[in-house]
Image (cartoon, rainbow, N blue to C red; front, side, top):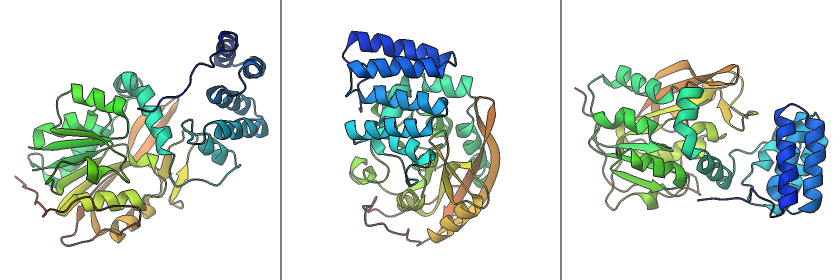
Length: 334
């Protein structure tokens, strides 16, 4: 589990930082900046404090000052668990990265795991697991059974709860140990393991594991800009003739992928269609639906189900190891 220093280690600095937070919540970002600067004068190597200062400066419209603070974060915490590099990109101070640091994603969801289900489902009207399951029903039939399902980025198991009754074997993988602990408590998975999707799935699977006739990624690909590497992994895990089901945040038709202020990526539909074809996948169904709220905004998603062509080989990346060695399964459609 990734952790980071929320406290500066100095009680006075922490108190001033707390006041800064209260000022920021009240909309007084000038006062927040002043108090946070005072805190950092007492704790100058506190990466989390510099990160907050960057956020306050950004909110006040001082993008140059914000960028200076985020560069300080990177100097103090090069693994970038705070996503400072992403923030620099959004303010035009750095190139847009094709994906966020895995340490940032792990820390984000470890910190979010205890309130994840409540925050998304009850507060943000999060609908991806239900919508993706319904789309699978349209494609494969409401009574279709999948011999084996792999849930990539399974989180707390929201999609697993939806699909459990339609499979005899369900395995889930996530980068966050906190999220996996919550998923384990729901007792819907046959196998759960911590793994980086791009590099760790093969090692995390059980000995003799076979390709799945359904691979799902519910609300996962939004944390990848360039989808080519993760699509290669997902395709290799899918048996010939099997299904890949996933969701994205919808971008404009003219963009391939774009980092958003939420620090999540959106993707254009033509890009998705092109990529599926390149990886030997036939798009069976693509739906554009509202998937959650973000403040006053409604986030529109792309939900897709594609079938892997029998004998198709995914485009390989030199960074991606073979995810499976076994023979494929077929989908049993009832």
